[in-house]
Amino acid sequence: MTNETYVKQSLELNLFFLRIMKEHSLFLAVSFPPKDQDFIREASEFNSNFNNLLKTAVELASGVIDMRDDAVTEYTLDAEEKTYHLTGFRIDTALTQAELKVPRPGVNFEPILIEKVNNLNNRALSATKNLIRYKTNVLNSMLSCDLFSLNYPLLIEHIRREAILFVDLLTKLQNRMEAENLYKKALEEEFFWNQIMEEHSEFIRGYLDPTEEDLMEIANSFAIRYNELNRKIEGLRMNQFSTLLSESQRLTKEIKNFKTQGTQGLIGCKIRSIMVPLLGDHVLREANHYLHLLERMKKAR
Image 1 (cartoon, one colour):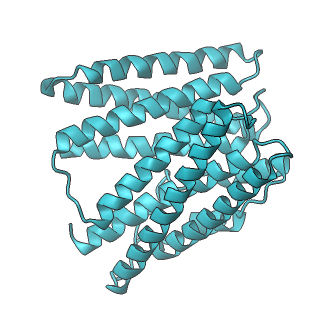
Image 2 (image 1 turned 60 degrees about the vertical axis):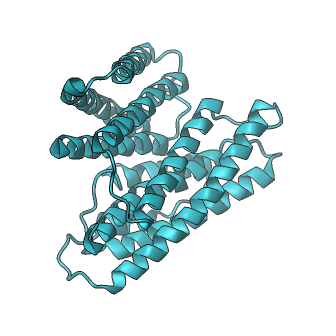
């Protein structure tokens, strides 16, 4: 791995996952009852910490890499403002505004950037490992009926898995590891993100008001289709791989459109649900991220 590849891959990974981690912390903080101030305070501290890390990533990325639609979308700022209005949880919208204005690549690659990115990766690793421990504590407390949250236990498992993936990917980058088995790695990534998309569909279905029958049916259909796709992957043979990549890509483009419409509906107060608008934009960015991964897999065949 060249130094330039290391820097670019690190920045792309951090721009996506650091925002995801800071939003996980927000979703946790606003989900607990007033009696659990310690859990709320800790989640708020994680949110602040990841916000600062993301600020560093945006500064380092300026003029070095493109700001992709898995890092920030045209809806992120509006979703943040609406979520602050609904929850009172303070959100650094100035950072989002800065991210939307980051200049396109054009500066010369500076060797000092390697050291700065290495430091960012190490700080992100430490923060995310601590967040995993916190999420584990939340999950265990919920399952033992010692803690109430508006989030499903499966959602806590879901966001914990995403944090574990971030740590794994960062660790490999820090060790400058090349993929030993690209085929196996691609299959694992496809299975992982199909499961994430399936669970998004289940959460959306569960957070919708019972009167939103059409949207619930669409969400349920996506959950079923992703589950069926992963069953095919479990029994996959080499000559089937490209076919299932295309299936995953088609289905993820469909769910991206569904999530886009859902995010617009949540921001515009057109959908009855108990989802904050930022959660809509959050899952949209994860679909965008998966589409980037699928495109990379297809090129690597």
